[in-house]
Every structure is written in C-alpha cells, then in structure tokens.
Length: 227
Image (cartoon, rainbow, N blue to C red):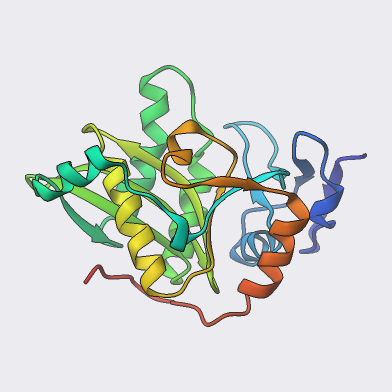
C-alpha cells in the first residue's frame, strides 16, 4: 500500500491503510488540531530530528486495560518502603525533556525532537497532555507522559534516573485511570517491560472499535492531581 503524503488540510487516511510496519503517512505538521485528530483515530507521529514527520498506526496494538493491570511483587514491596513520592502534571516539561535526553546519553538518538517537545507542551497547556512524576529527595527520579482523550490515555514515553522509578509512575497512572473508569492505556508497540504489567496485543481493527467507543466518553481536562 502507498504511504500517504499529507497536505495543509487536516485530514488523515484511515488507519487500516497503514503499511505492515505501521507507517501510514508523511508530512503535515504538529499543530494541536492535527495531533488531536491523529490520536483520536489511533495515529501518532514518530520521526527523528531533521527527518520529515512520519505518522504511524501499527497493528497489532499493545494496550493495558486498567482492570487487568498487574503490579509485580517486587515493585509492591518497593512502594511500601515509600522511598519515592508521586505527582501528576507538576513538571511536564521536565519529564518530556528527560524522556528526550535519556536515549541521547546512551548514544541511541531520540525521536522526541524539539518540535515534538514544543507541540506536546502546548497540548499540556491546553489540558490534553499529562505527566506523572516520581521524586526522590525532591529530585525528579523518573516519570512518563502522554495524551488523554475521552476514556483513553495514549502513553508516549517514560524515563528512569533511579531504578524502578518509571514503573512506580506507571502503576500510579494505572490506578488513577482505573479510578476514573478509563477504558484503556495505549502502549503502541510491544515491549517486555510493559507486558509484566498486564499489557497485551490486540488486532488493529479491534483497537479502532475501542477508540470509537471510548473517545466520546467524558474527558478529564485541565491539570491532573494525584489524591
């Protein structure tokens, strides 16, 4: 199938037309309107600095249903020790910049470009993008960020400066999503790291069906707090 060239018009081809590797389209911009339309249709940007914007809709899709998530026993024991504290939307820009630099330190490069940081920071200011922070002795130890639309949280990236800190942030997020009756957490593509929390792959068409049901659900706009 062809990879679609986007124009200034804010539209996307159906996610079902993506290539086998998930690539769907190229071009466009990272405006809030385009990003929100993309995510509501199961599409997300992923590209390197200096490259054109690439849009993806992989199938199968890795998701976590909040009522299925599992917390590893070792992590439960660590959380009981209360070495870390967790907040939400307290340091979004710190979190996304940390996610962008963590791979760079390992000489792997990063897909979280300067344009991506600016775009998602704007979505955060608009109440769509959110972060979960894990702190140790008032220092940012780990965290994650993503987008919330209706009953779906679209996870984007996570980082750890201290062992298990991003996992604690993930557990805290999942507990909040369960409390708020979210339908699912979109993890995009399979990793062993996420499978241990109950993540599983579902076919692309099933994911699209879930989106149509969940996106119209009541949203949770504005800054999030962990109670």
